[in-house]
Image (cartoon, rainbow, N blue to C red; front, side, top):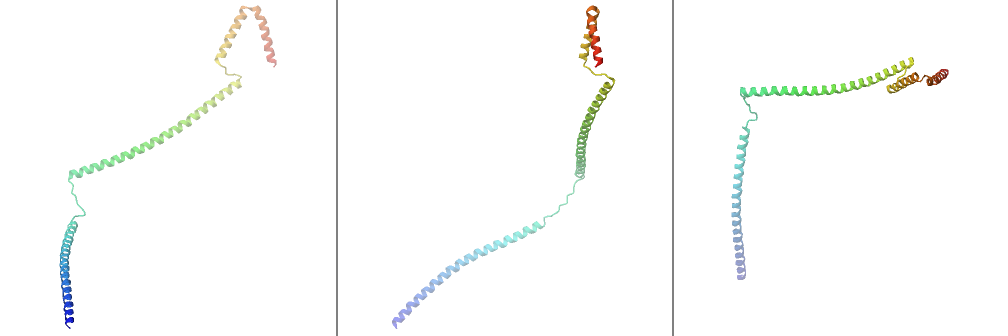
Length: 188
């Protein structure tokens, strides 16, 4: 039994040592938990303070007006009215200028069209007039000759008449030839 007693004492001592070690570990763990809890409590306090500050900031933002009414002086009001009138006048001027520009382009194109048609009709009328004059000449038995050719013929006729006058004997042969030639031409 003594052995049992010794064993029981040794088991009791071991058990006691284990309990002491476990308590020491629990105490250390509790101290760590207390420190951790203190940190968490400090963080929670900081969070509560931050939330409180945000609520104050939101209240301050709610107090900011969404509409601001501005009262202008009479001088400023007159300036803006004058400025508005000038802008309206410039806008009308710009639209008027655009209208005049478009009207100018339209008039220019219309003028080109009329001028082209007039030119074509003028050429056609001149051509028809020439044809009518040439037909009248043909009906009357007249023809149009080159002035240079008429001048040469006139000079040759004058030379021949001068030769006939200056050489009457030699001219008789020519005059007989001329009469024969004219007679043969009439018979054709």
